[in-house]
Image (cartoon, rainbow, N blue to C red):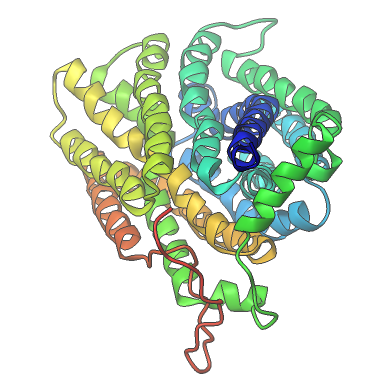
Amino acid sequence: MVGSLPSAAVPTSVQLGGHTRRHIAARLLPFLFLLYVANYIDRTNLAYAALGMTRDLGFTDRNIGLGVGIFFLTYVAGQTPGALLVERWSARRMIGISMITWGLLTMLTAEVHTPSQLYLVRFALGAAEAAFFPGVIVYLSHWFIREDRAKATSNFMAAIPLSFVIGSPVAGWILGHTWCGYAGWRWLFVLEGIPAIVLGAVSFFFLTDWPHQATWLTSAQRDWIQDRLREEAPSTSPRISVWHTLTSRTVLLLATASFINYLPMYSFAFWIPTMLKNLSGLSDVRVGVLGAIPYVVTFVAMQVNGWHSDRSGERHWHSAIPILLAVIGAVGLISQPRSLFVLVAFFTLGANIYSYLPTFFAIPTETLSKSVAAAAVGMINSFGSVAGFAGPYAFGYLHAQTKSFSYGLAGMALASLAGGMMILCAPRGTNIPIVDGENGRNLAPSLDSSPR
């Protein structure tokens, strides 16, 4: 009887762990998912509003490209400070304040009449949204063990393609209507800013910053998740600082890869409606419907990719393959296929680049301590977000100068190829080397690098 006690105790621990993980996921992920849907709809609705703004206000592709890109100037500047504030202050407060502010600014965009007004409101919108994405990535590391992190991140980031699935047909429908003498594209900004304000207010009360504060978990569940997260946390030397992290070769490599990969990613996101309309000649409403198809596929691909990455414990190839598929999509679009089916298929391959994000951002949060991971995530996404300015603006400029999408698509293909290869070259293991720039010593403690 005595010998049977340990084995009898194991199922209890396993059941507690499984129930705790499911409880946390069910509580946090659907709500965070809704927040990111609102975030991405507000960030990218300019891509569809541009169809009406060019007609009503005479905006050029260059004006729209700069309006898209200028958002990222302040968005970049706030990434690392925002992530650190989530870590050291409060996730729910930062997320709530950010959402309410950007919702109001989105509604204000409806009053734009000149390019300068568009640039100003987009500049402010970037500052309002800056802390949200890196903050949530850091926040997920407070709650999800390594085994669940890529799945959790992919569930959260599935809001990106779903926001296009929802936003594309809705935006197309709104653009086709005028109410109270107000053009459809203006109503688009008004109606899509309201959810961010409402959800931001709710987040103050619904989100919980840390497991030990979660009254919605039992004491046993709180102890279990805190113990598991403590066991998995990389031990850190006092010599490792945020500065050492940000200047290490590996983190710089990941940040550079992020920049290169965001070039085609944001170019696809903001120019798919315009390219699809020009290449197909369809109405705004049909462009909105067909523009949703690539993101339905991306939604599924993102979930499968995150699930398989967690199951196999592999991150690099799961990050690189979606990027390399985007190369095929961009090259295929250069040929300007006449078949609508083939055209949408190539757009789908291009949009599927988003599937790399969950596995890519699992790398720093799994391998660095919480404080330096927050800084690393903020910096990596900051580098990438610079491309959010450069990519759409350069694409719009090239199209305005050449009257062809081919040059921009060729640049997107080359960037995707380079970005995918850089991720494959990044060091593997359970910790990112933090190298002292003065003497080349690895400051990170030695950790077991065997597969899970």
